[in-house]
Image (cartoon, rainbow over all chains, first blue to last red; front, top):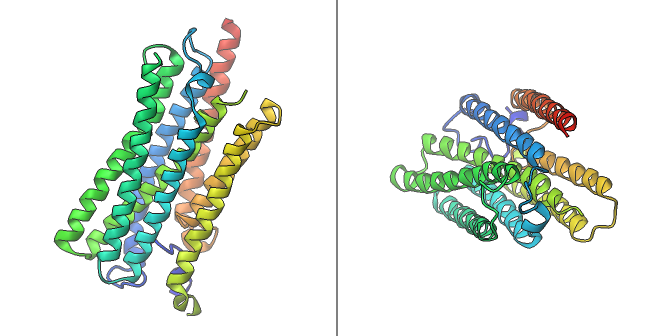
Length: 208
Length: 104
């Protein structure tokens, strides 16, 4: 088991002993399969976006609509929330009391909500400029892709709230911990999708 | 067993290293766009390379996917999904750009 201690540093329950690594891994592997199917959905929406990029129909163009400042702030918020969730996983593994875990989950929730606030503000500005989904093929593709990620973040935030309630009601038992591990995978996965979004959508759109 | 002793501190450090690397790559990507000094295609290539590096950093430090034997199941699933994604995305782009070219 010594070699396995390292393999999923923040994700296994090695320190707690309530669930064996094998059990935890079977449950987590199933969730990986879901995540990868989700990745396929995003990949195809990226492909659609790439195809539609020049179909602006005389309407707003990417260069005019994207702003580098808010995109950078959103990126930092999401990246930092990944770190705080990592801290939550570590606290869960090493600390028997749920208070630290509760705190880190709360910080992650706040960062996620701040991200959503900035993103909604971006969308509102775009729609205010006349860049709404029905304007052109490019904007339809944009509003299919980016808000879908936002929706994932929204559901992730809801999930964090649910886990905080479960933590308060049941305490940190094995089932709750396994659920938090899945939530962690989901949250880190959303950050990876966001890397693709800020690179392919925002930064590529701003190349002159 | 020495890994167990440094457990918590080592894990925190691993997350912090990952965060630092990701932050560095993110800032490099945004800086390359904010102060554009290359041709458009070069900038695009730099962007994609930085994004790929950051995805690998996230998988390694946040999702703990490694090349070691024990985490092979996850890794195989991810590589297989990456293959499917690459086939579908590149296929879509090739076919539809070709179609557009013929229709223009």
